[in-house]
Amino acid sequence: MNDTIEPDDSACADVTPTPDAPVSPPGEIGINITKQKIGTIIMVETEDGHLFEMIVRSPKHGVVEVSGTEQRMKYPTVGSLTYSISDDKKTRIDNWIGQYLKMMIVFRNGNYESKLVTHASLKGEGWTFEVF
Image 1 (cartoon, helix red, strand yellow):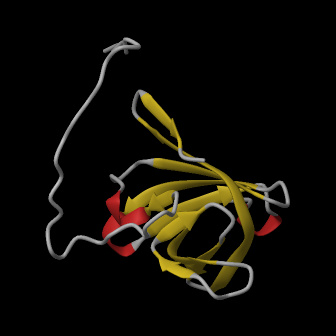
Image 2: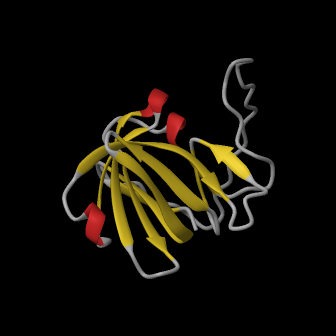
Image 3: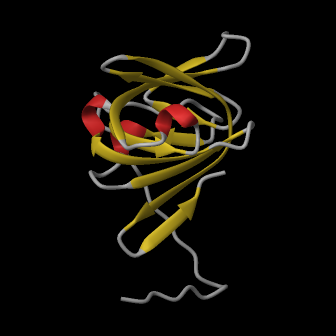
């Protein structure tokens, strides 16, 4: 299936969230893990040049299968992306991957805090989206 987008196309919609739906932080660009579909691939790059590939396994619980160029992430490992936090620890956003925030991933045998995230994209079957 190939869709084409014409330059003059426009879209309009009204969205009414359910009362229990998690809300993205206002003004924050990022990825809410709980809103992804099972199997969605999240590609992340951090300021120290490491790349991470996360495959969403259980969105409701933030469970992802992580592998990457960082030595401890060499082999795919299942963990939970619990939150992202600013460098000064003043901002914390649960279930979130945000630009210039550190990811906290909890594994069975320990926790991992990344460096600041500089790039993130989403991939699914037949589509990709550059988040930032």
